[in-house]
Structures are given as C-alpha cells and as structure tokens.
Image 1 (cartoon, rainbow over the protein chains, first blue to last red):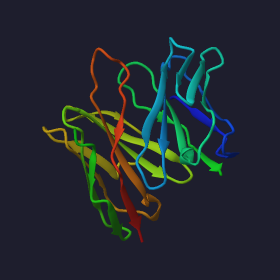
Image 2: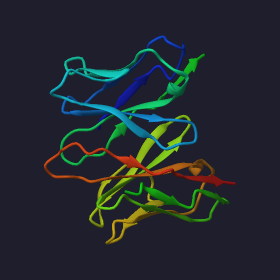
Image 3: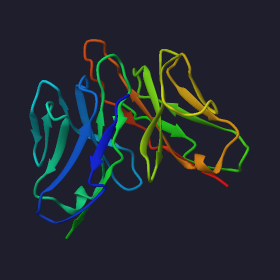
Image 4: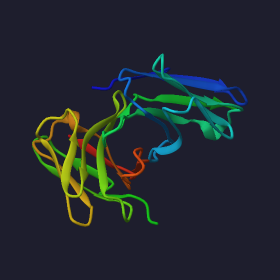
Amino acid sequence: GENVEQHPSTLSVQEGDSAVIKCTYSDSASNYFPWYKQELGKRPQLIIDIRSNVGEKKDQRIAVTLNKTAKHFSLHITETQPEDSAVYFCAVTYPGNTPLVFGKGTRLSVIA
Amino acid sequence: KAGVTQTPRYLIKTRGQQVTLSCSPISGHRSVSWYQQTPGQGLQFLFEYFSETQRNKGNFPGRFSGRQFSNSRSEMNVSTLELGDSALYLCASSFNRVEVPYNEQFFGPGTRLTVL
C-alpha cells in the first residue's frame, strides 16, 4: 500500500520567515495531494491541494509544489505569522475511491 | 450547511469495556471515514462507509467496527478496550461526486477517548 513520509516533524521559524514541509510517497499512481492544517484543539481543515496534472499551485501565502518523477510534494508558507502555528498534515490518494493516506504531521511554531 | 458533528466529545472508559462513537456528516455527503489520531502516529485510517457499505478498511483489529445508516450517519464501536486505544477519533465526510475523482474530506471535531 501507499506510504507517506513527512519531514520535518517539528519546525520553528521566526515571524516573517518562510517555512517548507516536504512529503514523499511511494505509489506512482497517486494523483491527489491535499494539505490539512490542525490548530490546537481543533479539527483538521484543508488548506490547499494539488492534482497530478499540475506542478504548482498557490493561494496567497501558501503554495504547494509537486514533483511526480521524484514522488515528493512540498508545502511552502511565506511571510509566516503566529496564526500559522499548527500541525500540518500532507495526504495522498489515487483513483478508485481509495482512502487518504496521511503523513505523521509537522508541528510548526512561528515565533513572534 | 452545518458541519460534521461527533458525539460524545469526551469519553472515559476502563479496560475491557466497549464504546460507541457517533458521527453525523454534512447534509448530502454519503461517504464517512474514521481516523484514529495519536501524538506519535498521526492520522491512521480505520474504515470508510459509503451508502451503508464498508468500502475501505485500514489495518486495525476486528475489535474496531462500524456501520452507516440510511441517513449517512455513522457509528464506530470498539470492543474490549485496551489502554492503547486512548486517542482522538475523527470522522470525516465527503460528497463523493463521481465526476470529480478527488473528494475533499471535512472533519468533525473528534471524540477524545481515554481508557483507564
């Protein structure tokens, strides 16, 4: 089955700096790559996703890049703010109503 | 639309007992998935129900079971509780449109289960 590795497990950045989280996956048939943000005590929420026919997608301060050849994708957060502090999860799935497989999460701390 | 709801929000049980958790999906969503979240393991997939049928199953023992009703509400049951079952149990619903092969999952707030 699919295996997703997420790094780093914890990340601390100064406010205003950029943060990058990377995930690698094993199944080349995977074609949907969402990122979820989970603030302390709250439910995970989708913040951005990318499909396999797209190499990059941007939404204001967040972006996701996908390298299908190398089987990895990354979340980029620019101009970080304290409210970006949360746990971020990447996930992967492939066609056929298959379940999402999540990475183990990255705890991002933005220091003011 | 109202979001995904889960009841109860907190549960304390002792080893050997059983527990039933409930999830009400967003209106119109037919797929409900369940996840176990623990600090070290992240989100681990338990099972998914679609139109009252279990469509996918993760690698959990048979003590973990679930079902879905005709109104798409879902329940999961854990029998013979063990200390290691202490976790946050999240359910997520999706619309599962056939023409869109990627389905955003909307999570509920979770049920925090503590096994003593």
